[in-house]
Every structure is written in C-alpha cells, then in structure tokens.
Amino acid sequence: NAGVTQTPKFQVLKTGQSMTLQCAQDMNHNSMYWYRQDPGMGLRLIYYSASEGTTDKGEVPNGYNVSRLNKREFSLRLESAAPSQTSVYFCASSDGRMGGYTFGSGTRLTVV
Amino acid sequence: GQQLNQSPQSMFIQEGEDVSMNCTSSSIFNTWLWYKQDPGEGPVLLIALYKAGELTSNGRLTAQFGITRKDSFLNISASIPSDVGIYFCAGPAGYALNFGKGTSLLVTP
Image (cartoon, rainbow over all chains, first blue to last red):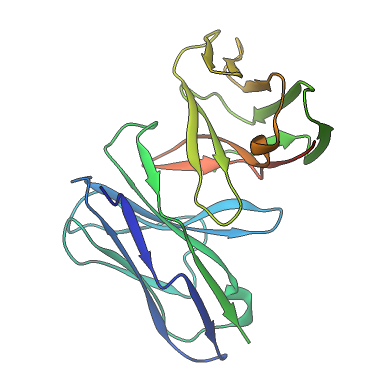
C-alpha cells in the first residue's frame, strides 16, 4: 500500500521555467492538499481539493495552479518559477476526518 | 486563519530526559493534532485530541487538549535518539489543517 506518492523527489529550475509536481493516492480519499514548507514557517496550505472536480485556494496560492485530474491525482503547476518558490512541497490526502491525513514524502524544489 | 504558536522553537536534550512542548491558538479549536516529521519525510500523525480536557497517550507520548480549547501540550518521556525530528501541532481551518511552525528536537546519546 503506497499511500501518497509524489514525483519528482528533487528538482532544480531556472527562474521563469515551468513545471508540474505530481501527486497520487491509492487510499480512495476524497480530499487532497498541497502544502509548502519553509524553514521556521511550518506548513502552509497552497491549494486543496475537497472532492473530485473541485479546487480552492489556501493561504499562499499566488504563482501556482492545480488540477484534480481524477479522484487519485492532484497536480501542482508552477507556470513561471521564481526563487521565492524554492521550498519543500508536500501533498496530502484525507478521508474527511481531521485526524485522517496522510502525507507524501515531499518534493524538494530549488529555483535559481 | 487562526494563528498557532508553538514553543519552544527548538530543544536540545540528552537521551533519557523528558520533553514538554505546547501550542496555543488565537481562537477555539474542537480538534488538536500532533504530528512528527522525520528528516526528509512528510509529517506523520502521533496523537489526535477531540475533546477539551482529553488526555491521550501513545507509548512514551502524552498529549492534552487544554480546557480553554485554545491550547494543547505534548510530552515525551524518557527520550531516545529516534525521537529526533520536528513536532507540529495542527488544528482545523475550514476544509484543511492549519499547522504551527514546529518544535525541532535534537537528542544526544
């Protein structure tokens, strides 16, 4: 049982380049989330999808777009990467309970 | 969203010592969660608290949901080297979770 799988694990981008971070879960969860983690800042919500077909902005959505491709997959896109987007990105899914979150192992992104 | 303030920001202790950390909120919560993040991994749930005054244990870990519903505490007894990591408190914020900034724990043998 893989849980939440994120790809890639590491990525280096040049300023202005675009890329998509992939996330897939195999737990049949309805809700999925993207967080970013910066030193001393904890985890901040970028976007979430409460159910298939819906997406909503979180605390720090600027510079990002998301797609809930199907129930399993929730991708995060950076259209024009900026150094301020250097961070560790975590995808999570939930069965609807506050204690029911499962996190992926993260994507470490550096924008130079 | 609600502000979650965790303290201390970091702790450096010797193996065998007990550890206490806490989290306070600017508003009332009906759920408190404690997560641990190992280096290079995503957070993993340690303990979930659903009722004011609730005290819950998970092995050497004990967490309490404060009576005011604006705070929570996590204690680790007899720390061991594998307790190293970042500990986060979290509470509900609409459809998602709001996290504190974390307490970084280092344990020396």
